[in-house]
Length: 371
Image (cartoon, rainbow, N blue to C red; front, side):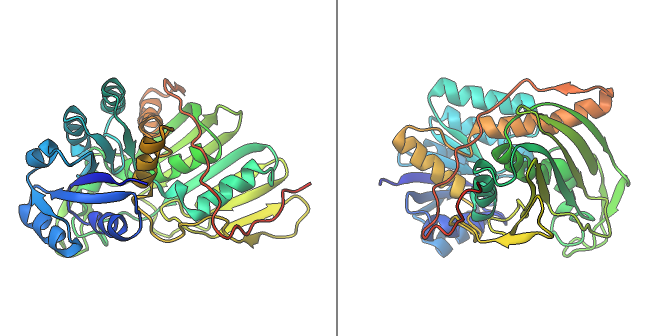
């Protein structure tokens, strides 16, 4: 197995887990260069993780030994940086979302196809042990025919803990664009693509006060919806709901994702994590039972999607966390706002294949398919 030589643009908070995993976990990846708008951050990260060099972005994109670039910039920069990566003739893998608007995301997927390059995007948590176990339960018929789903991401906002939370309330932020990709990638992997939707979006407060350090007391002007809900119509006939909110102060008693079938209900784990728990209640059973995870990667495995893309490049197969999936999720997120503004149902223009399941973990501990 060869190694895909990767450059990284963006050495902020999220980069640490990527650099750690690429150095120690994913053996088909090799980080060869780092770049950041703050050069000192790239230099420090290169020293910490034993990476050969830190450079400017232009120098990294021109480097002959860089085959793919991991784009870890802030959301509003995703499109410009990913476009530059592709125009430099390199494969691109981006943190979520793929872009801050559907048109820009479509241009990236089109450009990658025209150049014969791959583009992929986080989140890749749906490839982890928890959601892949859910995928196998569904595929093996444990809940029968899927008829519905619900997804919830409810919190009070990020200004209470994040050191620099303002961008969460700017275009490309908000609960749907920040956290929606985790839930949508999971739902698409578990159920399939969406064909239409109806959405509602609003904001409870126009200003937020930061209560975290080092910007305690600063006021954030809210420019995006902070409470977003939608009814999703899936291609297979199931109907689902999704609610994401930064306006909920008291938490929730719901499972993050619930899948309803003709023979039972499946409670899926937090799609912002790679592990469990996975709980199942079949028709006639008194209560939910927690099942063992049948797959590897229950720990924080960010970068798994990039590793899968490297394997897909080598083997000439479709990647799982591919640009088409991210673009479909991006259209859903934008479509919710379009539907909310118009008061009309939104018909999806894109679709995508349901990503292939991951190989079973070793050892595989999974019950036989129900009769």
